[in-house]
Image (cartoon, rainbow, N blue to C red):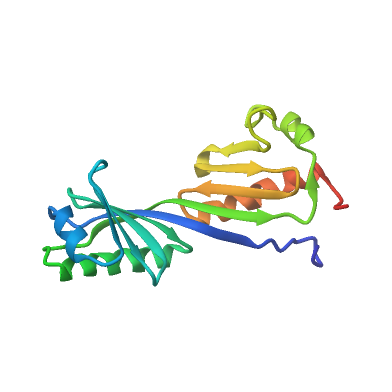
Length: 186
């Protein structure tokens, strides 16, 4: 712990999912034949395209809807989406980048102590659910932030939410509850 009682936790964003539209019809066959780093999935009616910088994978549908996954920040997600739109433009499509939105952020955080899961689940009964036969973590939902937190006994937590800000706020809100049920590392 730092002086003043504040704790510095590293929240590592591991995946940002974003969607956007290009407002034109896309010929998947053309993208598959002429594009680079492309996997054509005709059974699903989509094309997967990978970019190296920023490192993202995009699912492209003929309707012009595109989902980007794998970015590690909201800025990288937007940059990757714009780069993808530029690639499609160079393939001859009349692309107009629109409706960009970050829809999901996945982050992990390691706490400096272990957690007594049964005690935590009992203390936070209506919001926390713990089914050790099904999953080794307590699931805790914060409705107003639309965030879900998976809490493991090792002190590791996984947070999903609609934005990086919501994920950080969720960690700040749950930390005092976790600290009550913590035990020293062995």
